[in-house]
Length: 33
Image (cartoon, rainbow, N blue to C red):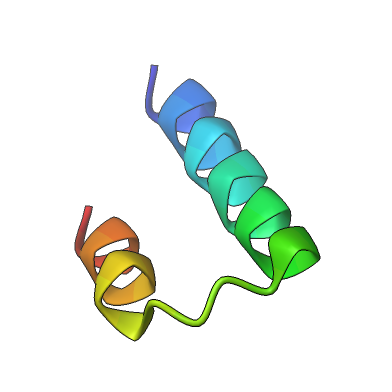
């Protein structure tokens, strides 16, 4: 299940980078998880 969580988090980061979201708080919050 850990691998699935990493994949899910990776996809979130990928879409965030695609949309160029400048909310560093959101990005840092995701990285804490």
